[in-house]
Image (cartoon, rainbow, N blue to C red; front, top):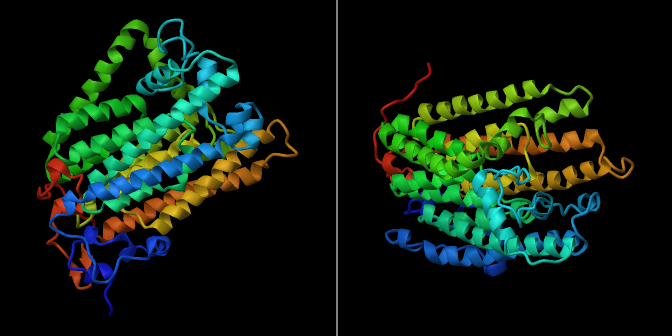
Length: 470
């Protein structure tokens, strides 16, 4: 039977040009001259030195993506973030709303007497620092300044994220296009401060991949202080460390992350522990929120008790751990850090108390690191964008039911969005299962550090724990 282009290539699979292995990338390349020629190929032995040009190109393209994100918020920028107008025009953003409601431009958050801020520590402090640069003026002018400053900062963050992603997979730097050019950036990048935590988490993975364990732990501790989801990355690395027998290295990573989180939090724990921990207590006491599958019964008139939703969300973390362990310990070929992380993170999301529109940003770097096909990326991103519009129309309809989105349709689109995340999980699982299989059976001569450039201390280590099912 005819072999694939990847199989025919004398290069490692990750060295093959994206236009040779991805039909969407090949079609999109027509605007710049078409796919890479048959006799042209990246230089294999220097591939790890050639990721910078790709990163430079993608940095420029990412600025255009953020420009579209700013344009998407143009109505609110000119008229103000007013309810329900901001929902009708789908230009809502937490950034100017939180700035105005919490007073972070004048008072350091988490201190005694400061208004409550529903953000983890590092995210809240960054929001406060940006707020200090806002000049005096009317409420609208201050909102515009704060949003504009964040637009500049997010542009820089995305550029840095592109560089970190390309450097993480130097043999396939064009995978970072999944970050730079994703439609999810257009709709979600300027909704919240989440991208700052995403950058810290991605930098931690890069440091781990280069066996800089203490630096990785430090960055991961900061990431956990900015967003909670990097805990999933820590657990995913731990599962692969069990398989490879590198538990001492993971223990060092986890210890550095925990120590960083504690040392960063210590001053606020001493001064006003209630202010710092309020965001976590708020999650514990909350019921089902927008985007969560657990809100559907409430919309249909049979809401779940808050305690039940909390238990279901915790069981979701347990399920993520079990499925992650199954994937990490049972496949013949060791999965990658990014694959385990994405599978676990999707399970945590679809079973969570709330799935905000910006949650898709957490998946972007992992999608890039895995090298998901652009077709699958765009299918998922299409449902993300559809839900983005749907949730604002539903919320706006709470004030004008005759104009808003009906509950039933909102539930359907919510379900389709979560199904698209699970579709992404299935595609990644298929990639993990099929790695190392050629036309004649298993292929075992591919170096581990080329299979997973983020393996770090686990690269080349023989399996110590492998689960077999009869």
